Length: 244
Image (cartoon, rainbow, N blue to C red; front, side, top):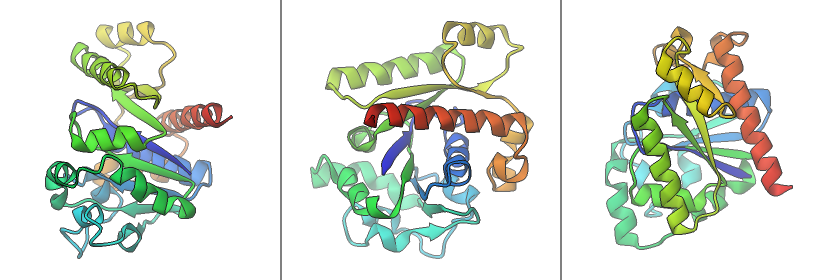
């Protein structure tokens, strides 16, 4: 099992859309048993995958071990893709981690799920917080969507510097997100980092939340679907290189 965190210090960079579409690529393109664990209290990934619940306010209880994570996992409409949903209780997760003072609580919970899944994707809330520290300890790879703008680039550099300062060995994979190649600033950013995968700005991608489905489910032959699949293939190559 490998854990892939989709994380950004900055909000509004297409993180949840990327996570949902990578989950689809893992489950459908790679035929892997995949879990998407929504750690963001906004619960956007949960909404897109149809996971609004009757069981509200239980997401945080997984971390206090009042409820086993496996009991809250739900099937989705996508074969081999399961969901561990978020809810508003996760707003207090940073405080809980601080009170528990257990630096690897998330890692231990992921170990408990390892027998049932090939890939676990974490949709992470933005910011440098107790939750992000737990994610950085637990993940095998951190995928960071970066909009081609100075502020988004600066946020990525802050994350890289933070990991280096901590001596963390988890690799980062930056991904250019929401790219409009007609814009000079975007074209310059892509030229500066030509090896980074690219997710375009596209109406199909923007419709993911409205359709409540990944692009691959409703437009599998589109350029947008191919872009997500290419990112997923890059992730698989990175994981293979690390384990090989």
